[in-house]
Image (cartoon, rainbow, N blue to C red; front, side, top):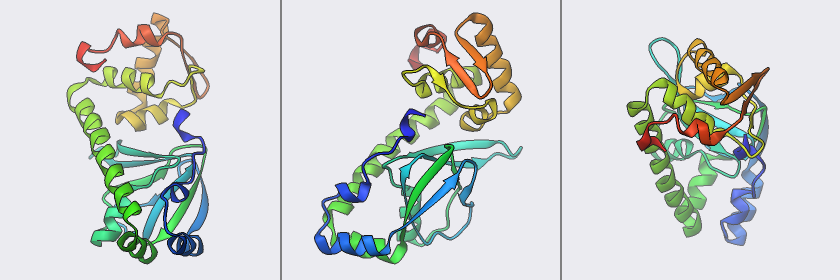
Length: 224
């Protein structure tokens, strides 16, 4: 995924005071996870804040049929705002948080340390406010897409959104189904129809987009 590459460490770009940075350096822990590992389960108490160093996380819930419905993604250089909300308001996590890349390196800030620095450092408060504003806009787009597009259009839109400059999307049909919120069978059928039209080529764990321009023409006019 194009968004999963290593990004500048969020903590180093916040212009924290020397004391706050030293405190964070002492308290922060780093972990490495593999694809599919669940970091937090729905309803679980969260004891800290997660910042992605490399890779990507996905926040999702389950519908009555057990199909995953994506809520949001957290990419390299970003902070998991749900974890921030949980520790500040003493809430349990409202969804599942899972690794969505082959590997992810994640920094973990204990709740007590984050709360203390949040109170003392205006730059951290400003960062969280700006991040929440951007995330609200992003999540509104996801909600609109889910409510207004049919499943085929959602898959097409997902392919366009995830397509890197190489035009090779390294995801399985199940991965696409999890992201879009449908079944693998539905995704496979739709992808094969796109392949017959010549818009994509399929190979093991890869989707090659031949023409993003032609794929975009299949979207409803208001979706472009």
